[in-house]
Image (cartoon, rainbow, N blue to C red; front, side, top):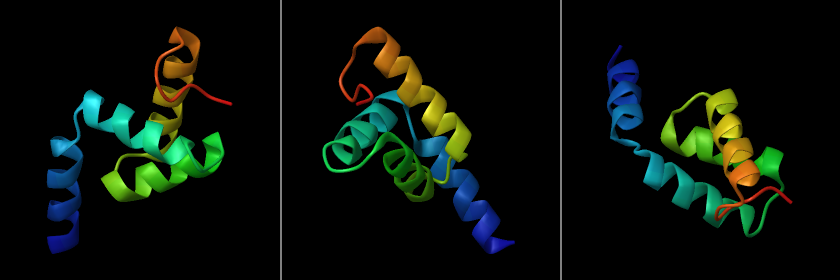
Length: 67
């Protein structure tokens, strides 16, 4: 139960800007799949949500665009 509370607090603290920055850093050295998994694990966010955000960034041509 304690871990669940910690995960919920961590997820709540992740802003879109922080997520984008984390994805940009991870993508500098990893594939989209690996970067999404690593960022999801680090933030406690669902992997599919992190991957979806990466696809949005790639579509918009923003920092962290998919390779």
